Length: 123
Image (cartoon, rainbow, N blue to C red; front, side, top):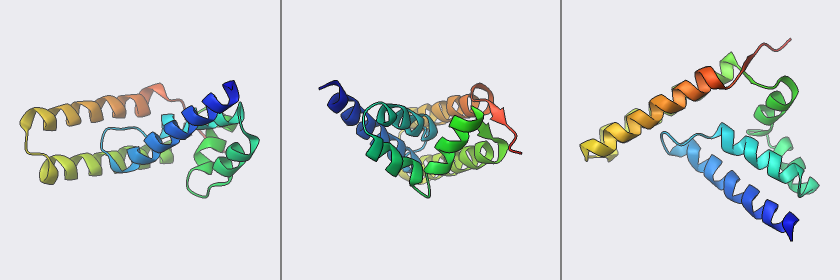
C-alpha cells in the first residue's frame, strides 16, 4: 500500500513538474527531483523510465551525481522561466495583483535556483 501511495505522489509530482515548464513561476526541477526520489523508493521501472527520458533524465542524473545543477542549467531554467512569466503577464493576465504576484513568485524562484540550489562544475 505504501508503495502505491509513493507511486501516486510521484506521478502527481511529475505532472506538476511538467506543468511548471509551461506555467510561469511554477518550478520544474524540484518537482522532477521529488518524482525521482519517490519513484526510486517505489518503482524501479518508473524510476528507470524517468532517468532514461531524454529531456528530464540528465537533470536528475547531474543532481544525483554532483549534488547540484550546472551554471548552464540554472541560467537556462531562469531565462525560460522569465520568458514565460513576461509572456503571461503581458498577454494573458489583466488583473494587476495577479501580475505582481506572478512576478514575485518568479523572483522567489530565481533566488531559489540561483542561490539555494548548489552550483556544480562538471569535469
